[in-house]
Image (cartoon, rainbow, N blue to C red; front, side):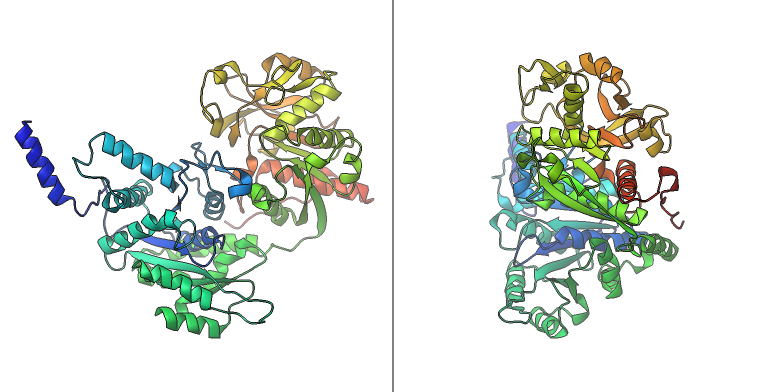
Length: 592
């Protein structure tokens, strides 16, 4: 191409791309619809819970749904975020480290998500700059509008194509008015304009204050928050009012009048006993039908599919809170001051609680405050111990003392990721006689590095680069307890997020003393699940994986189910009961 032709092309593209709207191949305008959920007043209102609950109602109707969370921070992913800053890091099957809201979507939709369902400012800006360096913008000066907003719209449309979604649910992180998310709102405004009427529904999640000194609900903050949304050109179609108690009709009338949103679309989203009750609560006030009308989707509804889905879900929610016995499980970690750091563990326990008819109470113990002298006192009234994942040396010796107590007192134990590694160290020290056993994460030149980074991982440079992330296949040892928990399967798949492994040179020594590695990598010398024989302990299981990440309301994690069941039996034995494993209650069959 001659210089003159190139300049002509650049000039022509400059004229043609004032409205920069890249379209992915296969995109069907008019077929793919969007629901955009934004927050006002304060953050942390539960946008993910609302969006996933509404998405579930659409999914129940036979529609294909695809959620996406858009975060305002410039991190490329959530992997390096401190749990105290942003809650737990939720790992997807493809290895993407995300916000904990992706866990809510996966659990409510019973759907494995991918990197396409999560984006950050860091990802968006990296993509824009990469395209600029490659000359993709053909000489244009790269700006927030249209190029950054164009990249955001492209992400949404690419997800629609990839998932063949009827409805894409877009959750905008943060709160309206935050500088870091303004381009997300502008992109969504442009999306609605380009897609046309009946293609995009905006939902404003707001907060209704109820000051103790006043004694009544106040809507002014909600009104002003929604006004900020309207100022950026977005008129909400639905307003969900978060509150401790049900929002009164008078308050809803004020908001309706102020925003031009009909009363039937201004709904109360007050606190309930469980987030799993929210889908039915939204259905009861007709929000699902309103969305179908606004997006012209009534003809795509499969009524038979909805009836069957509702029946299965009712089986679960009707059993919430219907428990016959109680067990207390200790979660012994170092982030226990913030429950969101262990959100998936809480949910996995709730799933088991419903299926087994057991009232599971979690007791949060900071292991930095536990030692050999006080461990018995701190664990005196619990029936099971969970040692969750984590990084760094702080609190590890306390974890080891908790594991020793569980092993010696035959108390049910479940170790997750770091809890697996700590179980190996405890067993090596106190059973194998390797008193100086440790992990090279905590003591680089320890005498017995039973936990270490494998040689092939040491070759990988960069923070996070040597992590084993995402879904991995596990070969199960036939006849083992863990194999039986997975219905005697030979293979299963769980999600991982760790660097350190059991050093292969110590495996035989550990096995000779009774430790069973009942889950291994299919081709590499990587130990992924351990247990003690039931002749030594009724339920002592650890896994390098995070089974809590794949526990679902209708399909609880088998490792958690076995653990909670064992804890209930432990409670019965120590209360003078006569329940045995063969007599313990099993999950009732679910309706087809």
